[in-house]
Image (cartoon, rainbow, N blue to C red; front, side):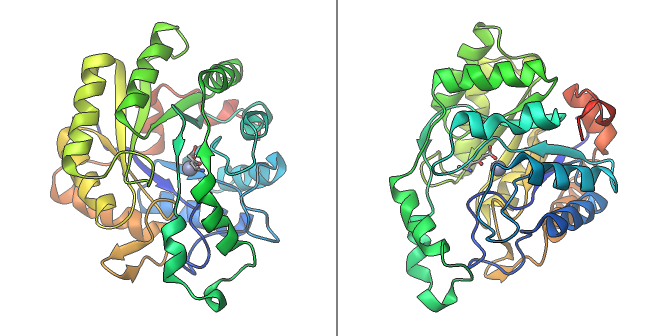
Length: 311
Ligand code: KMH
Ligand code: ZN
């Protein structure tokens, strides 16, 4: 089996400060967490930018530039920027980070869906929230549709191809794998196709072992195992680690991080992204799966190299 590529998803657009005090929010906090996660064994860090004043998700390319350049100055880790966006962000706003930074890797969401964490509002009292926008943001996701229609996907594909950025395909359900097959047939994707099976998000497929195996079987049938590399995201605890273990045994790769899961053990908050990476490194070691370095991951994924980015 090829060496394990560990991705650390540091902040996300959806995890809220009320959920954990350990979420890196400012550019400096995100840079520091990225370097620690890389030192712990992550070959790739997946970054979302937050407004440095309000901690709200932002698509401001200059905040992304500060984060990506700060990480590059201190680590060889792959920087995977998000094009995910969140409520109220247009496709054009979401994708502008690609021509601006010309990153090696950027997320590419392979279909529309509901995407919400509104039920968490019932867990917190008003005085628990750190920022005035959090409760309304979480409640508002009940009406949110994460839009990635076929026109959006063509637009994102073209932007990434024009800038030498490899898309990290985020597939949240089996129907999204049919969309990927469509994109392959339209010759919009280069091999090896790199995809994350994103499981356990409210609005997407669940995070049972059977869900991952079905996603894998469908991708093998539609895309062909020789044409893609895959990683698993299990949102929440214990899914993040159970599915990482499953993927490690099956020859896939794994993503961990506070974007997807804030717990290191049942009811115990992870103190950093590095702590989550260290746990999946221990699981891989026990299962005899060596860990890929950033350059080994670049070779596996066919990335252009950190000297070809624009930051
Ligand atoms: N912001 C979430 C709706 C990605 O990083 O591309 C999904 C997301 C995925 O942001
Ligand atoms: Zn993300």
